[in-house]
Amino acid sequence: MLDSLLALGGLVLLRDSVEWEGRSLLKALVKKSALCGEQVHILGCEVSEEEFREGFDSDINNRLVYHDFFRDPLNWSKTGEALPGGPLGALRAMCNRTDLGPVTIALDSLSWLLLHLPCTTLCQTLHTVSHQDSCPPGDGSPVGKVHVLGLLHEELHGPGPMGALSSLAQTEVTLGGIMGQASARILCRRPRQRPTDQTQWFSILPDFSLDLQEGPSIESQPHSDPHIPPVDPTAHLTFNLHLSKKEREARDNLTLPFQFSSEKQEALLRPRPSQATSHIFYEPDAYDDLDQEDPDDDLDI
Amino acid sequence: MFPELNNLLNTTPDRAEQGVNLTMARERGQLVFLEGLKSAVDIFFQAQEKPHPLQFLREANAGNLKPLFEFVREALKPVDSGEAGWTYPVLLVDDLSVLLSLGLGAVAVLDFIHYCRATVCWELKGNVVVLVHDSGDVEDEENDILLNGLSHQSHLILRAEGLATGFCRDVHGQLRILWRRPSQSTSQRDQSLTYQYKIQDRSVSFFAKGMSPAVL
Image (cartoon, rainbow over all chains, first blue to last red):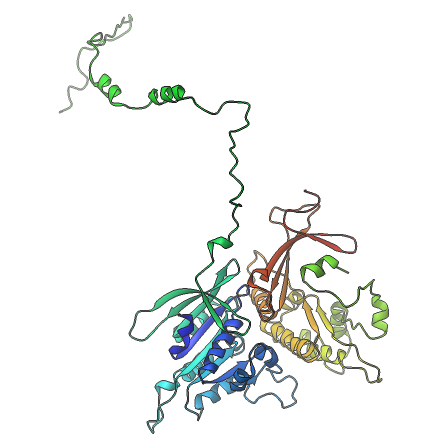
């Protein structure tokens, strides 16, 4: 499922956390797109161009167009080197692209954009960018699919903006893992189909190719060495914990005092011949008032 | 200076330092020290001809740390006297949580660190070391955004915390080391390590959990 993420168009959210970073997966998906022959645009706000391109070989790097917003995103240096309009301007420019082939736009990161831009503006721009292929130009020429990959750091945003971005996204990949093994929970919403929810274990190789895996193997959990025989704890005690056969039989035949067996039931139900009725011996005092009337007479039972 | 920590982080310094004389370093320009408290007093009681690094203290609205960044950049400029400048600078920030208390937003502080990274790490191939406090049980949204935002920008996170069981004379705390540099060849299993430590006179000794010499 992870390797077919790019088959659908639209917005793919890569939700990562401090423990499980998502840039490697973003780079792996960027590499995949580039290998498929797509043009790839990277809006780089968080890491330098060198750091992003690290690990890619030259033919991949030639296909990547890096828009550098790392060096001076807020135009503090005022040298005029900063790209006009900032990251939002660059994103909007991609809405009006003239080249109509399939394209992948990687946002590194969507969190940076969300912290610096109003949520509504960002959502509107993202919607326009990711739905370009559904609004073909008037001349009827086919428009290639647009994939927008957005890296989102979960811990930085409240439920409101996260919810807004989730509703825009066709696919959400949440990164996690156990014991050093990374996993991706993929929530996919396709039009007119039920949403699917799958978890895929994976690792990223040094050249940023995806290696899909089965899951954390049982053998990697610490377990005792099978060559050491288990120690019998009852072996060297000063008291006897074992039962002989006779003792075991006697124990099994013993009925416990509060156990309700069928014999006990019979004994209780069958009246004992020695006691037909029970007697009460009463010696009245001089001051006792014995009323022979039945006090419950007036009850209509 | 911290041989055990160097081992844990898999680093070896080029030369074994015997000790550093900070006063001498300051005199010859190797150390540039911005004393925040003193500077903050200056900004209120002395007229400033040019923007002061802590200019934001004077502003009514939540400002940005551009003047502070410019101070950092100026301090890192090579000297004009012609001698070789200092290489591989290190920027130490102690501590960022104070800036939040002074009224800056978490995003403004994150932007400052971003620019510091761009200049110190990318341009000058140096390092930035930042101290920030975790608000712990107290709900502090701004501090959480700062802490998490910084964590995402970092390549190495050292998280020091007290022991869950309370105070101990021989074990002062626990250090969790988290590497976030996936491009290195460290395997996934080595991503995070936890050690306990004891602070001594001039160094810190580290040991695996439960393996303090005092309790063995």
